[in-house]
Length: 259
Image (cartoon, rainbow, N blue to C red):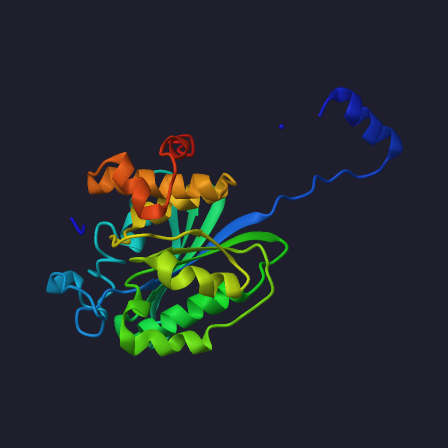
């Protein structure tokens, strides 16, 4: 495998005749940009042709395959698919919305594999945009680390810069801390989950991080959740999983699960 007021307080409200309305908590939302894997246009070690076609949303490794974003979130316990839109543009082949236990929503977009530069630039633009005060926001990039390819490196000249804000950013791609962390900080966002080695950016990591985000986990807990999920699905040791995400301990990730 690529691998709930007391009666007393209610009485006070009735006596005063003043309406009471609890302050609504910010709604957690994650915007996920998925660059479909593409054997032809990306500098990768080729994967089997059926899952390596960057134009095929139905079978692509990062979207339609078993551990692709659409398939995995559609089937994972506690998750439900809210709907999908096909052919959003020539670049965005499909957009799907998901919810986890009515506590979190995810909007995921599948970018044509050959448009990886556009996917990276759009990701950085979302990362640089301050979050809506009514929401807690996170943005995630999933796919090949295009900045590792010499032909794509000039795209960094177009990466936006912004004063610091509190939108969290995640990059599930090989060696993403080295290639993306500084750019994300310059864009004002907080890179809370990045990688320190080669890895398979499959959706079980996104799912674990999303649940942690809904539970308001801190950076260490988010990295721990990612590492724990990665070790489980890749059948590697906790130590090896931690090394991929710079996580100090796998134990914190366990408490994030409500399954």
